[in-house]
Length: 458
Ligand SMILES: *Cc1c(COP(=O)(O)O)cnc(C)c1O
Picture (tube, rainbow, N blue to C red):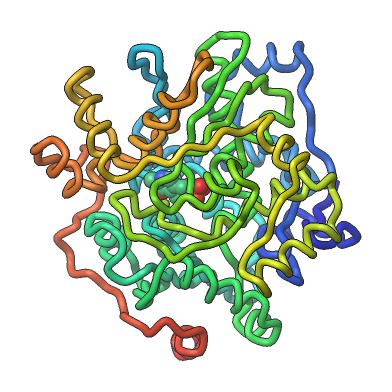
């Protein structure tokens, strides 16, 4: 088994290569040459496992050339010791909808589930043994804190986190900027998340710079993150004990929901994957109209989804276009030259077989938070609320699971506006947010970020 690029199938990379690089040369994304498909008997066997054992069985299929199953098992156990619950995630029932709580990790969002493993993989794969590794990552609010928590204080690793200045919640920012030791650098870029992501991609495509600083990435374009997220789709299905299942997923960069698409390819009987977006609805538009056209980012009350360039969508395109790397390359060229591309009727139908897409605006999001609280005495965060809203709007589905992507405390100001309540930090948040924050504010400029990093790396 090896990995290739969505824009060039002839390339061959190992798991370790793609783990380190994140982005393929030429700008494509990595995909595995084989995807294990479980049959009924194998699914039955998996259904008896606890979360961590299940994670071992699933993740192993994507890295077995580099990590033995026993090593992986130990690595996963160690990674999830930082979580509140032994079972890592938790499935709850609200009327005819289910909620999968994915925010029991150290920084209160689902990003911890993959990032804690990735932190330990850096160590296990010994990528920083001979030469210091510099990780550069863009965050819309939650990836950054998860990465800081996972990589804090690790030997021979520096982490540079770019977040959009003043465009994430204050709790999101504080978790990220108060816990870092000397290997962590927070950068507030005067721009949007898309600007941050663009800078990171440009740095990756700058061969001289990349090799000079031995650069690595942990954005959701890193395949290892997606792999870790496949696990909870299976886990939900086994917990629900029904013949089929659908998921409603608050979506920004199309990473989390893409993990569900891979789960389906691996044999999980998923009827539909529902893309829930806020006003930044590029994915809703491409799925319902066929046109992929990034707009300006509109700040919303679900900032982790304030994204207009949903990078992982390219990974879906690859399959929708019949695994034709040339076609992917053409569409991506259209995107960078003309600012958009268009899918034809059969490609759209192909997507519609697996996906639905619904936009939920801020006003409705607040209303959903209020209604769920009134009806069930339970508080959900604004991202998760879009998932509930989207699930309600798609008719005719049974056994729908909404992915709960963040703890409401991270968005306590919005919660206060929606239901008038002050939220306390959950007991498993082990971070003192009254500590002095550490971050530098930088212009939205590739060159300035580059120079900043070079000064720190020396
Ligand atoms: C990152 C994030 C999302 C979006 O996930 P993608 O993988 O980018 O689609 C949704 N909700 C929260 C709380 C997040 O942190």
